[in-house]
Length: 123
Image (cartoon, rainbow, N blue to C red; front, top):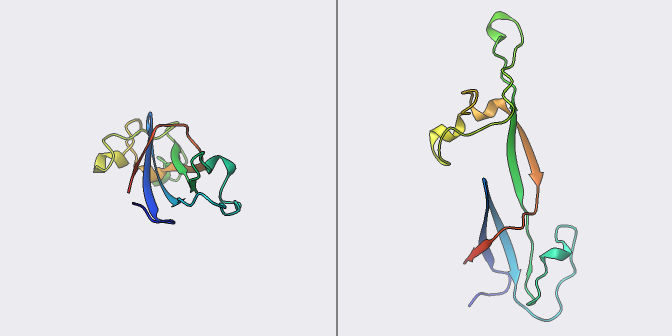
C-alpha cells in the first residue's frame, strides 16, 4: 500500500522518444490541494489521484561544427538533425550517423511537452 505523498517512477514510451518523469501522488479522496502554476487541470484523475507531471524533451538539431576553423574560415556541413549512431547508453549513441560529429556540436533544443502515450507505473 502506498502512503500519501509517496514518489512514484513513471516511464512513458512513444515511438522514437523515451520520457522519464517523476510524479508525486496524493491518494486522499477528500479535498484535493489547490492546483498551483506547476500543476495543470489535466493531471487530476477521475479516481481522486492528483499527480504533478514535469516532462522535458531534448532534441538535438542542426550541426554547428565549424569544419574550416583550422584554416581560419567558416563552413558547416549542413547536417539538419542529430541521429544517434548506436543504441542509447553506448558511446556510439553520442556520435551523429549523418555527419560523424559528437552530439555536443548539434544545437540543443529543450521543450516541455505532454504526450498521449501508454504509461506504466512502478513503485
